[in-house]
Image 1 (tube, rainbow, N blue to C red):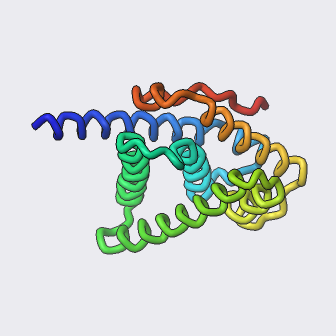
Image 2 (spheres, rainbow, N blue to C red):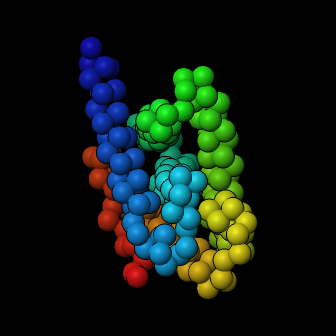
Length: 179
């Protein structure tokens, strides 16, 4: 019984952190100033990016609670994607196929962004953003550079934040780009 109580608490914390990441991803500056497509795909890519940077904070941590939190955020994301697809009218038989494709896209982006951040490679990060967030569309170099700077800054901000806040369900209030 005690295990179930902690599990529910972990789920609530993961849901709170995921909701905060989604809220950040919906910030209008990304769609106006940084030209992210204000579409279902663009919003998926922004949520993915925000979640990837959040999960990047937990990478390398060995604490079981951190691993559960990381998995919980991932689970919340794909539960939300499943629910959203159903609300959009995708049939029961089509949802699993689409969620599987979304998960594959997520893992591809996770690898690209994590590798670029770990290497401190601005070119790799910019290319990953262009390929994934902008889906190969022509984007002005200053917009790409600005967005890459935002991603690096967010990752650094989270890396410096104590884990206690995350465990309490508090996403550190990282600065957003100004319009």
